[in-house]
Each structure stands twice: as structure tokens, then as C-alpha cells.
Image (cartoon, rainbow, N blue to C red; front, side, top):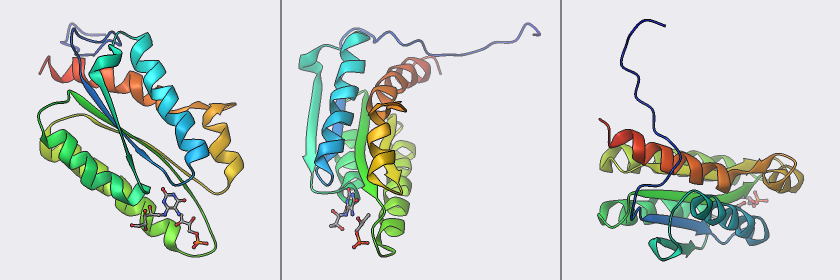
Length: 157
Ligand SMILES: Nc1c(NC[C@H](O)[C@H](O)[C@H](O)CO)[nH]c(=O)[nH]c1=O
Ligand SMILES: CC(=O)[C@@H](O)COP(=O)(O)O
């Protein structure tokens, strides 16, 4: 490749990195696994337990307002959002998923704080289980590593 400048964040947490995690309680049996995966990923890559703060909200729809509060507080280098939205019998699923994804993205862009979207949106419980620590991995863990990478990348800009 030509001799260009390439910026990339590594996945080793900077000294004193502080992370907020927002977990939605709806489908808690799934979300607790996502939360555990996020914490595991952060700690394994150098974030200290005492620098991780987790907050429970009722459902995924309450994540964006909480993310705005966390990201806007100046206390956190990154915010990870984990939840599980599983389709039911009505169109409620579509509205929840749409607003949560848009809201989380908006918080990141408006604050400049990396806000990671670890809310799984599935057609059924089997798909959710697969993404919460079984055959499709753990989306919470994945978001932890992405949070560290994004903090390290944005600090270079
Ligand atoms: N059906 C799911 C919900 N619904 C609840 C909403 O997120 C919200 O708490 C309520 O509409 C009150 O504002 N939430 C999930 O996280 N997952 C679902 O599958
Ligand atoms: C994602 C939801 O809001 C959904 O679980 C609610 O179920 P229903 O559409 O049957 O009311």
C-alpha cells in the first residue's frame, strides 16, 4: 500500500479508562449475559473493575436517554449499551429497534463519546441466546473491545 498515514486504535485500555454500561432489564436472562460479556471483555483488556459503572434501565427504549446522560456527564471515556429486543406479535418491535438504534447513534455523534450499540434485535429467543454467549459469540464482549479501540482511535485525531 502507498506510504499513507493509517490511524487505528489498539485493544489495550489506556491507563484509567472509565466505561459506563447501560443494560436494559427486559429479557434480563439474555441481557445479564451481555452485561457479563461486556465486563469480561473490558477487564481482560485492561480496564479496572472500579472504573466500570453499570446502570439498569427498564427496557431498550430507555437506553438512549440514559446514554445521553452518561456520555454527557464527562465521567466516561466510552458508553456501552446492551439489551435484547425480541420480536413479538405486533409492530412494537420495529418502533423500539428503530428508536433505540437512532438514539444511541445520535448520542455518540452529539457528544463525541464512543457509544457502542450492543442491543441485539432478534426474531426469536434462539437467535438471542446464540448472540449472548453461545454459538454466535457475545455481543457485549464484542462491544467492550470496540469501545477500547474507539477510545484509542479518537485520541489520535
Ligand atoms: N419488547 C421489548 C421491550 N419493550 C419495552 C420498551 O423497551 C420500553 O421499556 C417500554 O416501551 C416503555 O417505554 N424492551 C426490550 O428491551 N426488549 C423487548 O423485547
Ligand atoms: C419488542 C417488543 O416490544 C415485543 O416483545 C412486544 O411484544 P408484542 O409485540 O407481542 O406486544
